[in-house]
Amino acid sequence: MKLAGPILVGLCAASATFAASTAPDDVIFGAYGEAETPLTGAAGDAVKGQRIFSEKSLGNCVSCHQLTSLPDVPFQGEVGPVLDGVGSYRTPAELRGILVNAKMTFDGTVMPAFYKTSGFIRPGDGYTGKAAQEPIQPILSAQDIEDVVAFLGTLTD
Amino acid sequence: MKTMILMAATLVLAAPLAIAGGPDDDTLTINDDIEIVTKTDAPAHLDGLDTIYSGWHFRDDGTQEMEMDDFDNPGMIFVDMARDTWATPEGAAGKSCADCHNDPESMAGVRAVYPKWSEEAGEVRTLQMQVNACRTERMGAEPWKYDAGAAINMEALLASVSRGMPVDVAIDGPAGETWARGKELYYTRYGLLELSCANCHEQNFGNYIRADHLSQGQINAFPAYRLKNAKLNGVQGRFKGCIRDTRAETFSPGSPEFVALELYVASRGNGLSVEGPSVRN
Image 1 (cartoon, rainbow over the protein chains, first blue to last red):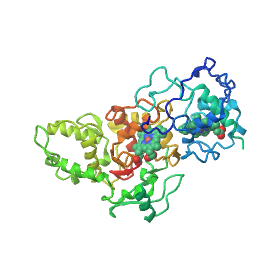
Image 2 (cartoon, rainbow over the protein chains, first blue to last red):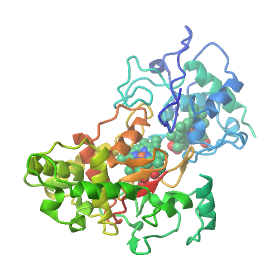
Image 3 (spheres, each protein chain N blue to C red):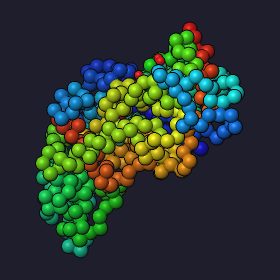
Image 4 (cartoon, chains in turn purple, green):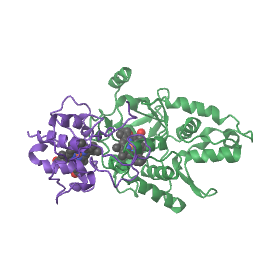
């Protein structure tokens, strides 16, 4: 399916709901926006996480962030910081919190909240420009978040 | 595409295009004649920017070059179509635009001050709304569809005869309320991505977002012929696309929200030259 020119994140990859996964509104943040508890019972898969990070139709993190370890991913953006080595200076809990809702860590940041389903102004249905269907799905699923956290954790040099 | 790259390679411009990190230093003169102010001090009401830039500064040399000569600017084809329309009687009154306004050139300066408060209508009108008011009230003709076909062509004609003149929309007096509403819309973070116009075009102009080099989202250069869809694009159609890309429910071209937003965004470009019809990717 060809989308009508999305700039950022592709259509929702969030379909798998695991019995064990924490709902977006139930995520507990620490004082600095970190989220200690994994969102699912299954360990994150770093290989899948890299794909979610890179692909336009998934997380599309590269629209704003560069990673020198991904030279084959074209058009890496400059809106956010370069993430080389982020796994050595951020804990998994911090990374999870930033992915779930970066505004809890960076007040007012332009980085979207990837695991959030309420509190939006005029939420849309993907990139159709039409009103969102209820219930609103998060941009990434709980397991997607864990996979990306695992991937970022591998970025240690 | 290939020919464009070749064109760019043989071009001698004032400075090489910056790969990243902001607007380039090129200057724009159309037909070796009309000097376009594409960079100037931000108007006093605008706190978020020191210098304002036309979107032209953020496009590659090949695209920039197409705007330097009317024969290379595909948007001018639609200007010519609108010249025919200008002189064609339509509607119950059997009148054309030319019957009341003489040449299109008599409209020089008009594009620069719209959107504008209409005393008789008691509302802020965009240029397309004003044209439609002439059609329905003076010509007895059907209104044109917003931001489409004949309406956008006519706007391109009216822009073309004002090229080089400074954008100067009024933001106070009776237009003040609409302007304030537009400003509020500009800074609202819409959609699942929670992004406002300002997040991209004030905080991040000059940065690449994926493959797109972000400009300040100025509208002095509209209508814009986009190579991407090979047609003239209106201001409000562009707004709609940008809001859609935040994964939001958009507003419609012609809606009161977009009229207000157009006035506000136009005012952010006060001091830049009218540049339309422009060429963009």
